[in-house]
Structures are given as structure tokens and as C-alpha cells.
Length: 67
Image 1 (cartoon, rainbow, N blue to C red):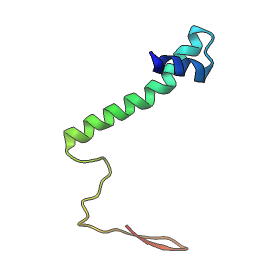
Image 2 (cartoon, one colour):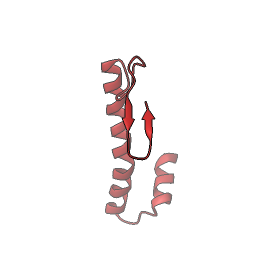
Image 3 (spheres, one colour):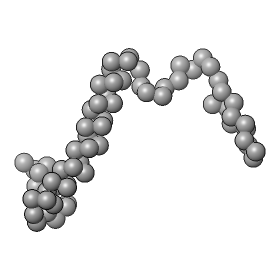
Image 4 (cartoon, rainbow, N blue to C red):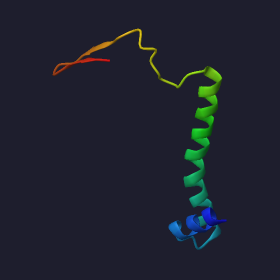
């Protein structure tokens, strides 16, 4: 209940639409994090993680970057 009250106060919600917008702003990143966590668990590693065995050299006009 405290979370709901702090959301209500932070967004200064006055209408149902305001509350729905606040929940959408909070719910989308939360849902995204949950789905990403499930995918990481399913795959056994974080998305875009490197195994450390291969290196990559990116050559640009102004700098060379080893990754």
C-alpha cells in the first residue's frame, strides 16, 4: 500500500487516466526486466555478454578500440 501511495503522490494523479499512465511508466520497465531475467536464466548467460576468448578490434578514423 505504501508503494501505491508514493506512486500516487509522485505523479500527482487526479484522474484514472493519470493513474493508468503512472502504472504504465512503472510497469513497462519492470516487465522488460522480468522478461530479460527469464531469458538470461533460460540461456544461461546475459544477453550480449562476451566469453572473454575472442577479441575484436574496431578501427575508426580517429582511434583504434580493442574490445
